[in-house]
Length: 240
Ligand code: SAM
Image (cartoon, rainbow, N blue to C red; front, side, top):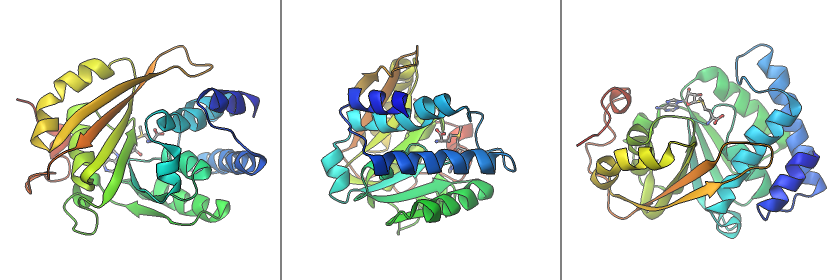
């Protein structure tokens, strides 16, 4: 656990014994289920600590821990095996978390994990972001929409921005290409009611490459025709 504890401390997060027990349980479930379902290519202990747990926690460089702890409504789109949502929930138990995932077997894993960790105020939904974005129970209902490794920015903002209430924000975890991707997404962002607030570079202990947190604020309602039908934002991203 040492690389996780030190890396988290460098991000200003102090991990206690109960957090470490939860992360250990998370790793065990991931490795066990991965033997039957292909959940992740990363299962090596140290790699999971850095590339899944610590990388997820790095979102707290852009989102205040106190805001999450105070009950912020967060949706994690294309969460896969629960990243970045589950590590954030472990550290900020007060947040109200919705995990959205298009693959049924991953949702089954998430339901198991939520029970195993005894997490409250977390739901895992089997759906595509495009469906939820047009569902009144989810459209413009969240304070934050977060995602990691789900799509290029012009596509991703069409998944995320419709879910966020005006005054809320989206956070996309990105690699080296973040600045170029954000430029490419300028038209999509303004069309969907967003405004880029900041790109936060993140250096993680044990990772050579720079990661970026792209924060986009929701400044106006998203026009009703967005998001478009499932698959369309990916096939035909909103470009000028
Ligand atoms: N966010 C996780 C992570 O960083 O480990 C998983 C990343 S994985 C590469 C992308 C996930 O997004 C897949 O599990 C896929 O099923 C899901 N996904 C892709 N498009 C989606 C959509 N439109 N709605 C919901 N889930 C989606």
